[in-house]
Length: 255
Ligand code: 13P
Image 1: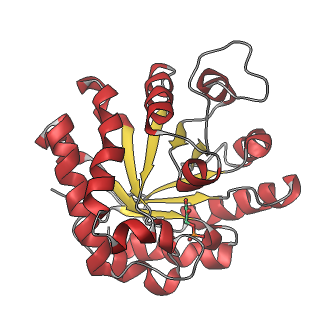
Image 2 (image 1 turned 90 degrees about the vertical axis):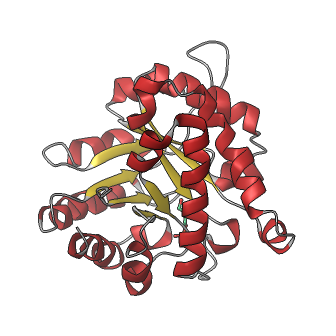
């Protein structure tokens, strides 16, 4: 089964309004010069979403948000509903990033609610999963991935094409230490197997599973060449055109 490559930039809590807008325009230029078969998405912080939306308006770049709350509306000061994101022009929302899980204490139960309401709001979902270094050392990687992927039980058959999984080993995020292509492939294959158990084989074969954790131009090709690695969720290297374009180019060459 051949799946389109998907390269996404998670801008995290970086950039000013002006720099986010410039980077968005740079991404439009980079995407125009790449293979149209490659999906490209950017995930700016909430307050830059509208500026970025305007700058990518006439392109194929997908607008994503980094998080949402697990309710439609109500007295939840400081939170953002997926319906508000949808209303802003956002197409996909990232849920369960390890920084949300580990810094902000998000549990699988909270992530379940977020996935449910985001799908109901007609957003696509990028569900992030991944083990910590202690969990890997204890041989618990697959157990952790299986537990985190269980939230997909909330996905209805007609919604499966709206889910992307991002495997992001916590020990590789922002550390410069990348999973070897073998480690990434092994984890991705296992994620696909778990997805198959929950949503069926056809959904599992169609699902794009991205790798995240210190992906850069110099390692993108070997990671993206793995049969179950369908793209990258890129943090640090998505913050400049010079770093992000080579990753899009690597995906283009493989598409
Ligand atoms: P880095 O690419 O900076 O390691 O971040 C990965 C990540 O967390 C993307 O969501």
